[in-house]
Length: 353
Image: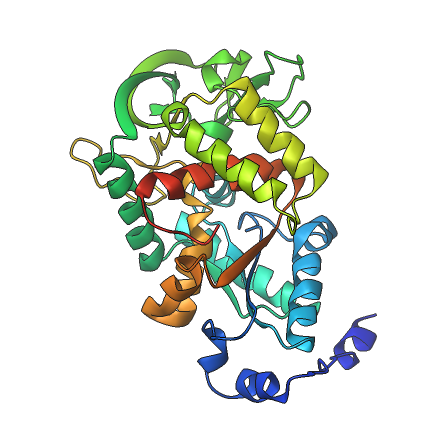
């Protein structure tokens, strides 16, 4: 199989020879062009804390690659972006298990991911990562605009705290029984069985993942994004894009996103008591980082900036001339269709959405 795959390195057939020339030479083809159909393609960012499996590839990476090849074959001007999602509790937990730093885990698994996708002949224009200065710059810029526009607030949040480990247990550092479906191995942020997002303090019989002790509830100040206030904007966006004649949203994506709007959006915490993540640029929150659900989708933007420098905005802040296609799994719909668009709309900037 390996010999077969290594020999099968297909060269795309280009109907537009100028695309072939530029793709093999300069970076000019990487920018939107007048008179061309400009297509921005992304595949969901896999967590960096494990080895990619066929589900990662089939679920979104291969689909995006096929579409990217199609765009180049027919002469569209396109770029294909993905990378590893490196911040958050998943990385910190893997680092604890392997006795390494979070940075060392990211280095190890980023290169492993990249090598595997290259082995499968997946042709990204850039396969990057989220633990970069570009990520910090863009994530903090979006937050500052949301904050200035009145879409954030500070409130005390009850959290589970492990006395033995002397730390607040964010997300995957705690597990227990789901309060909704009674699944006995639910995480502190989401139940893998019923798919509902949950707060760790609502878990039944919670346990610290590090030492297996039972944590207690303590309060800590956090920043919240006012999704309820942003709901009319994101609902208008969803209705507009899904009712368009050329909409390519799947039936699943439409149903899930409209279900979230119908059930009502509420304020949601966007910070965590962790060390490994994008720093929160707000006085009094120097010891906290952004929660990965806020931070991770911004990776598409920062990875594009790593490829193109300041020209990243010509793709991501150019809705009149660029079409965005995002290849994701079902579990990613709420974040790509509701959460991240809310953040973009809240800045007041004109994003490609």
